[in-house]
Image (cartoon, rainbow, N blue to C red):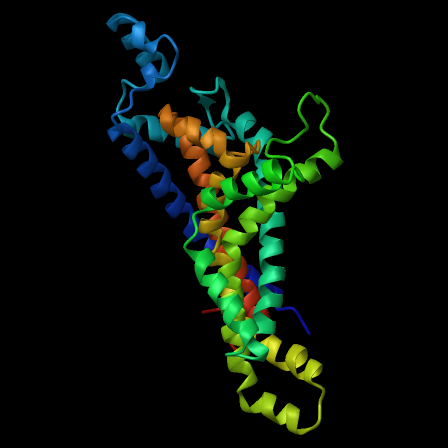
Length: 326
């Protein structure tokens, strides 16, 4: 199959141009909401509650909190275009350094969890679709609907209680063992198991239900019936015909799950003390850290836009009738 690189590049270029005003509006909204917040950045430090009015006014001036939010937003935008994201007022570090130290761990967690959710969800969905209405289908769909309503932090606490405290089989949190200063691959893998599995479980129901519906409908279509009539094996019919057609709607699900994946990752990281961007996000929100809030919001928005673009590109590759010029 010839890959239509030119149409794909044109679509990516259009999406990139459309993302510029979206990101500008999002960052402007962050500064506006933060300015309307009742939290005062001057009280973020430990001396805030006992400092005098003059000291607090000086702190606000040093942080730029005494200027209109539109001015602060414009200064942040112009600085970001040159690669300067500013300094985090809550963590006392450059914003780029804060994100650089944490983003890799968050990406690792999300990538492993998403891959698990897609793989396990596809397998369970296909098995459930083979005998819709059977006992396996009823069990899988019931569990999927139940997990849809389960909050990620509740699943995380339950996993910690059972696997870490009750069975003592896996670490309860963190990145390394207690008392260890070195970060080794073995320790990271063992500490990754619980948070990655919990995050995968939060995404699993949608993939199970989508695959079950798509493959089940494909099995009832005329081309699949014709393949069975020609004497092809059930494995060939299922994997070579029904699965290929039934997975098309799942490709659009990839992009739409990115916001939920990010939100779930923040909660899971908090429960398991995973050193990702969750702690920085919470700190930035509670301290009204304008530069860090804006940068993290841009990062999350960009991830959503990239996820939507990826799902559209995959759908266009899987179904040439859709194309890339629409």
